[in-house]
Length: 171
Length: 274
Image (cartoon, rainbow over all chains, first blue to last red; front, side, top):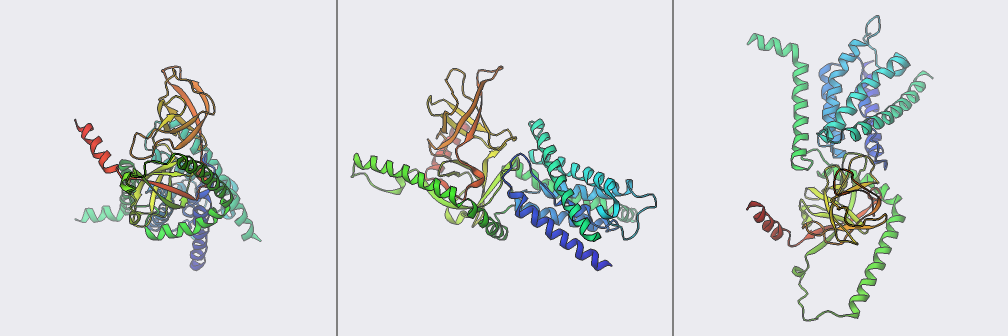
């Protein structure tokens, strides 16, 4: 069972980081910056040790930073949601509590739960990323709109990917 | 001692989080302070190579457009040579490369983005080819950016589509001086400030580099005016411009090496210190 988790998450890591670095970073649409790599951290099994979540977030962030000239921006914002993930999971746990093998995925937790889960954490991630990037509030309105547009695009793509894989596992 | 141990065992996750986050934030602040991406960037050997390999595909897609730009530039240069041959310059002048202020180094773009607030371009020439921080980068039909990081084999260019970029420009018809900036919203539209309302600025007017800094040679194409409206509160125009080159589709660029940069800079430092 444990092996299955490791293989699944490794494949998910390769897929998401690959898509981010090879395609999404190079898109010629300047008004939005689509980021989907945080999904890897969000979908880790519920009972992944918190230390492991933080270290994985750190290394994922470093890799994305190195390949997209982020200089620490991705690491800082990903670490934050890696840390906050536990509290969100605790707050929104099912009535019977989390089961040992639960994963916070679309196919296991249902559409409503999954939608709010990714909405909350992706919003935090995108806000922190764009405001750290600027490190001033001089362009507040522009940055705010860029955050909103990017968030909508990222969430749409995350939703598509999740639907695609959710259906596949059920079949 | 025991209480410390207790604290550690209880809050180790928070402590680890704070330590790692502090590390990441310190990297960001260093980048902001010196206007360069200090550590986590594509100029280190492996990342640069991988990224360059990936970009091969991008180069291939834009082959047609880049070819056309080169042919046009060739035609322009041919015209200029013709003009020079008609009026041969004094042949006694020493043809020493020291005489020419600007040298150009061709570099290939390895990585390019336009979707961030501060956009960097990785190029495949570095300190080995004599590149330094602060050199300007142009393409065959416009300004691209300024080098902020140099490693042995790669350099990082902050493109003009960055909220921290600032390039001195000139209105070609009236010689008025201004600054090219970007407000961070639309990467196809940049802004120019500093043109006084007393000069006539019209749509489609040409903007070129001012050439007063040691970074860019004078009269390099920058942009064409998209729309002009007078700023109510000041004596300047609000001007939106289109860049003359499409930065996202570039494959090759020229790095401008100013042979007299050190001399100019030390002179200017002298003035600033007084």
